[in-house]
Length: 310
Ligand code: NAP
Image 1 (cartoon, rainbow, N blue to C red):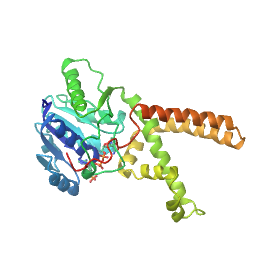
Image 2: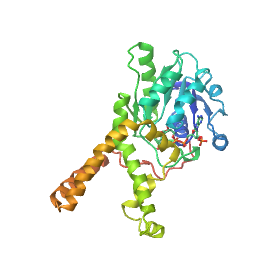
Image 3: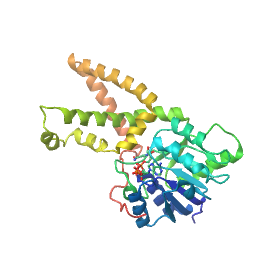
Image 4: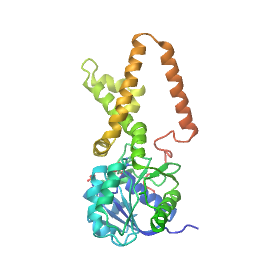
């Protein structure tokens, strides 16, 4: 028997992630009523059509009124302004969380905007795809995925209880929850997610700019590794612009390390140091096998499901 954890949930920004949270929470039976606020009239229309929200509005304060859980699922730089719009409608004891891909600056913005009577618990489901908008969401997006929470450094019982309830919520949606420091999150994600996207954007841009290689050839011969880069480079421009602006320091730190390693590879190729190349390629193959063994190998773990089912 499922138990309702949050009688009312409000989701602000109902695109790929926000709509997936609603579908998954409905499927798990852990929320009562659901209110949505979204800035896009087209998305609001789509959400009404999908029929999984009890209230759909453009007014953030209206959506969060009486909500027990508020999930901010807007682009990273819109988190602070959205939290500020929500502030006047928040009831005492409401949990304010988010799904943003950057945690340090978002956590600061949520704390600055939220009243003391709300519990701010920033979060990031490490799950998603290059799709966006409410129609792209699906109920099992978080199944067997990690959700990282970056709670405040507070030991009081009401706050700890709020963290436990939010953990129980994500667990009911199929996710595994881990808590960590926001700065550490941003460094880890700079390596595992942000830098790979930057490389994909860069390599696709470079190929498109090369005059001696035509656009037609890029399309025609993209069956190799390049095709995977084009999928990543098709990710939402607003979302990723915000990630790089908001996680500037960690990305620049990792980019510096990456550039040094690339220089070393370049030297190994120039001087024919084949052992160095072979050793690195063997190590990286082991890493790939480890990812597969950990069950984290695909961006969309349940490919083939009906995306329009809640
Ligand atoms: P999305 O599909 O583009 O959805 C975002 C929605 O929020 C859109 O409908 C957008 O409307 C709306 N919106 C923007 N600003 C708003 C505001 N101030 N108030 C109310 N609604 C607003 O984006 P997403 O992929 O779900 O990403 C949402 C968040 O999840 C981001 O912070 C991202 O970093 C994080 N995240 C994404 C992924 C992923 O793979 N996509 C994975 C993990 C975490 P408009 O279209 O009109 O702007």
